[in-house]
Image (cartoon, rainbow, N blue to C red; front, side, top):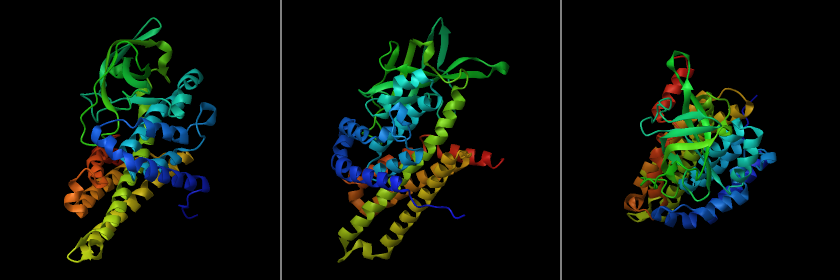
Length: 384
């Protein structure tokens, strides 16, 4: 049976709705937020009202009852215009809400998910540490059980959505014991915002994603109820690895959006800009560059569609997720570079979207697993 790449009526309608929102609501204002380094609370509120934060979450928990592919489509359309808004949604859903949705008990879901799914609150995912990077297993943050409380000590780095005015909870991985053979027992624990001993740093000064919230977190004898353990004790690392597999498909979709946005802007500019008496789009050098950009975006889109298809079918998709993330992030970086070249000096100006795209693209080859990590995962799935 041939692969059906036609979007369902529901998915197509969602994509059109988000595309319209991105063009009419995000595009006119995001440049100012980006330059100031301000978080776009009004846009997040509007996305929440649209149901975007609840797309893959069941209606009984306040969500829209859709699927993960719907989230990916929304991310792609948002990132065609701006990645700061897109990553806020991606992290809020796939990293903030989904761990609770996947592994939380009934009480935890009832407490946290309705507000997260509505976009009224944001959740965050505390895995990376200052000395860890790609070696996520090198966790040093500890949590010891004292009576009916976890006492957490340590720090986390590069955590998205962790310090906004509407952040409600950060789920962190921490060493909670030792297994046989001296291996670390790593568990996941939810830490509500404002908990004594939990400190959020000032915002990082970043190269890109300037209208999103990224911070370092510190835990100094931070106490939370024992009931804040998320999922099974000692399964925190495995839980987060599965969350990262899903997240890589979402980041791939976001990367495709940026790559396609570069094509959109370049085609428009190629019609408008004249050189030597003709629109620059009439010259083969520009035509070929834009054709390569479109081919990259198209190929990357097929890769994340294939990964999402396997995910939704309940089939193993680790390799496909890694391929999608690798191919899509490369496409985003390559397209951003080419779009900047097409725009020439104007591409180096922040007032033009391609300048913002160029600044935003590089992190896509780093976050949610570097390109090198994706190649490792692909090789392992091939038995190497």
